[in-house]
Image (cartoon, rainbow over the protein chains, first blue to last red):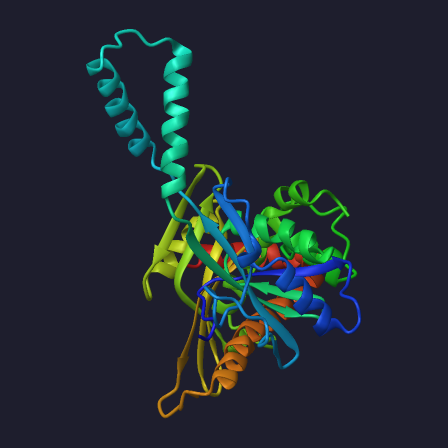
Length: 192
Length: 168
């Protein structure tokens, strides 16, 4: 699969680097934080690295192309519908009433709701979202192939967690600060 | 360096002014590298300063006039669709002013262009497209910054842009 996209955001690496030999270090860290190694299934969002060529069964043998690395960030989400909880809750209350219970305290209602939510959570599968990234290691530039704010935020945090490398998104201010000698100190909006 | 979230909001205007100027530069066929090969695409999004609302203008010809009128009324271009003519075909993309996010990226090959079925070649072509768009954006933004931070901006360019918006 060729990572086509219709949108992308760009990052600059401002702190940290891989250890030599870099490809070995990168593969090791990708495998360590591979989406398949995730076990915290009590969370509704799980995050890990994946491969853009085999995103559902990630392998990290094919990550070097030209002068860049290519792999994916996978964000798997489990979405629990509020309507489903309400439906199951109302059925549970009706069943208890039919069994002879006529009064429910606020705490009891809360407990029933929590129990139902937990039961539903265990049954709902995670929905995988794959976002490719292209990393020009020598240039310290990274293209992230989505502009979704939440996915970008997760990338920034997870990238640091995985590689101890800090990214900064390139937008007008950071572009000036990191890529040019221009100072924006005294600039104000113009009256075009 | 300033706090990122604070700086993002503080300098939003700079990206929007850049796109407004770029619209002006392309429409006036400014003699600058890349500008001569750029065309305005079929969408311009403008934030109307006074009315706190945005206007998205789509179309082919008349919409440019409408966009200029909105700028004359104090609006700024916040998203601009562009088309860049290359030897092998046209690159289509949109730039968002405040974030520099790129969207709606596509490559429209010229007739007779043979698309590679090789995975690596296809991937390299795709990455070439992204890099080319950033190369164009970086060059033009650098040129804009030189102008924007010089006295020429207030002395000449602002007046030229005002004259251009009035000439509908």
